[in-house]
Image (cartoon, rainbow, N blue to C red; front, side, top):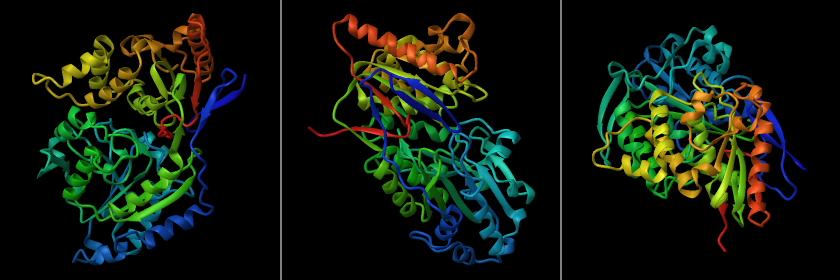
Length: 461
């Protein structure tokens, strides 16, 4: 049987799948030969925006008196903040070169509703020079009302609460990775502010069921996407002076650097990823095998891989997903645990009926469970197998679908060993194949090589 590789950031697992399996993969972009030079050129020649030196001069007071906020992603995104492709140090270097006091620079981790990062996690993802300069690093806390400022109400009714430290900074710079996103169309750009720096109360409309039920709230769609449009409006209310966004290939090598205006630079990056992440489909499949990639550090994040697989699934098909849930909580927050269990107990249709009821009180992170419900509107819950060795038996009991650990011998279950994913996936595929053969037909099988990053799109007949 042919071999296929599933990539989880720095780790990969090889699996064998039946003959005739279709490998669906995005095209290979050309990595940048000299990342350091590309980053410096992008910052010095911005898209649709004055340069940083002009922005600093335009603030109307001496550079040494200015405060600067540089917003970064948390560890659920493989943004290059260290090494030759690191974008953080060049930004800080430029601010200091143009006269900003390093003691007046603050790095804000745009955690959104995610948890705070530990010091070890920060040191693992950021360039050592950041710590050598004693630059302040803070994690956004969406529930700490004392650190939020109310900016008003959007045209769609969102009450906008934004991180106070960011709003009160003289210079506001966003960083991030642009990749396909199953709600907002693409990550990066405005998402560093919304949802990255908003208060919990600001999520009610932005991540509400009405927005996420829109067919435009989908991968690679910006026009007419209510999540994207709301995020842009909120980011403009908060104020953004400059962004530095990157695109990466499947080996996390730099393929593009886009610096400058909030919208113009971001659009250029989205145009770039559309060139290579789209996977044209001429059929749907009985069995689809995928993985949650680097981003799938917990079940919450693994939803991205499930939703992106939907176009490749025949109605009623089998979906088999491998995940490397290495987060401190391999499932997600207490909110998410409660809501995903609600989906498991009630099914997709009843879950949606609940959260759209007039009597329902919005609960943070219900949005991610709503995205899972899209998967189970396509296939029966029992046709989904989740292969994750880092979850516990107790975790598995609240999650939808079949637990891949149960395919292993009792002594190998819930081992925390990523290598066990291989046998889970192969056994799950064999079981699904037997089911179809028992019905008298040979199933069609697809492997989504890029997991949540490649975007299958059905071609027009």
